[in-house]
Length: 120
Image (cartoon, rainbow, N blue to C red; front, side):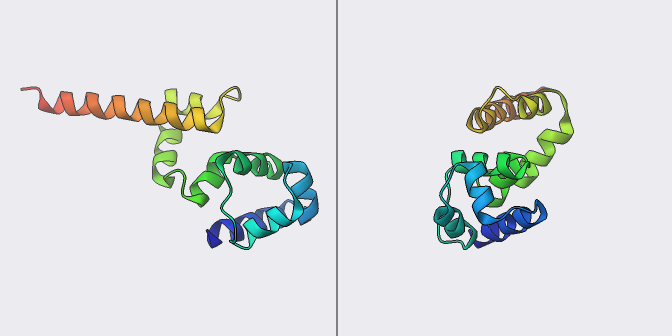
């Protein structure tokens, strides 16, 4: 969790935002954001999404830092293009919906690969 806080602090500094400014933009309290940065609090996916919007970075980036998503899986899905890229780029889906869809899609693809390998 400390690495998430350090990452957030660095992203906030690169965006040239004060703690108070980011808290206002993200819709969270200044003390709560400070506790996240110091590794004392573990934010929900919804809070991470709000912070990501305030920092103008992808929520998936913060999900990876928080351990919600696997970095290799996100990279693989993004590079694969097609369905995964479309799901990740869809602004009408919440991050939770994107994650669920990608997990289902990956499951279907893995099942299909197994079936192909098992054919005589």
